[in-house]
Length: 510
Image: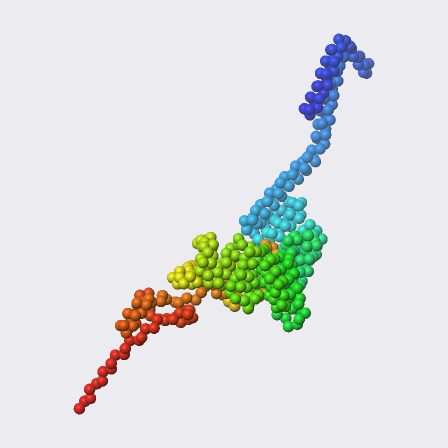
């Protein structure tokens, strides 16, 4: 209204100024119903402007009055919308707070207020789920299946409910239905993948990976890691088969897995073992060396060490040097250098290797395996006190997860199907190894050397005891040897037992 007035005023002023500038204002006459009105042109223009403004005002007033019902309806709708939004917001906040009863109250109220049916149904389903009402939850999620944009959400809710109730078959069926939609969700693939792994269906899991990669649900690196770990799991199952064809398939799977992911130690270990069994030592060495270069693991150098069993310790140490050269800066290489020095029994090499291990002897990184290795090094230097100190320190530090992959007999990655399932899932998603034996705190390959359970008495002490013909125990020893804890080369000091005291014979009575 104001804008219209200003426009008309501006036009009137401009016309008036134009007439005034011309110097001839002129006259204007109006004849209407027998009357004649004469006035100046300027006054006529101003009068016309006022009449036009009055007409516009009258027209706008008429429109405003005619549109008042629509304005009132729009205002009511806006107030209802704000109330519905407020109700939905309060409902979702109640769900976040875990108040199922309050969330359900707002969900019921939102049904009458909101026209956003999908959001109202989501609120109702989540409210029932928060209130732990399984019947209402199932009904709410089932109702969502009829809305195309909510179908995946409904299937996910029903699958979660089935898992909660322990109905594994129904959960897998719902996941399969969701996976077969035009635009499947990642959760559907992951549920099916976990189900295949739990059932030990490695071949089916491989097919699922290929399908998910084709539908762009997973990345190529995820697919590659999953393939490698699944083929390794398949090889682990097949290598003990009786027929030759299955064992050949196990070898093929293991070699392909090691080629796909050289840093996946279980595949490399299995490929090296199977290649060695097929008298392909050269290829076995290549696989293990590539694996060590990508990601060193203690099981790799142990498998590499055992490829040849008819060589001298010095030759073995020289061969292991080739493995160290593949990744010389890694912690595992520093440990392996000390192992090599212990093979040759060269004290200078042992001291050099021990010095190189100083970064791994800090309290925050020290492990039981390192303590055991240092104890062996002290034994190699004939430092019994140092060896005992390291063995004692080993009881105060943590174990090493990678070392836990070796069982007490030295077998690497001797896993159950459940362990393999856990390993495959973790490696596919994160590219990291899990350590089931470490998590269960199971016994591993021995980390510590066998030592005498007490200090050996010095020779002057032994000689003094022999002269006294009695055994005097050391102050810190109860005088009892634990043969089970002594080393095979440790001998108890030769101390004669005390002489028996003469028995008194009672006098005969007369």
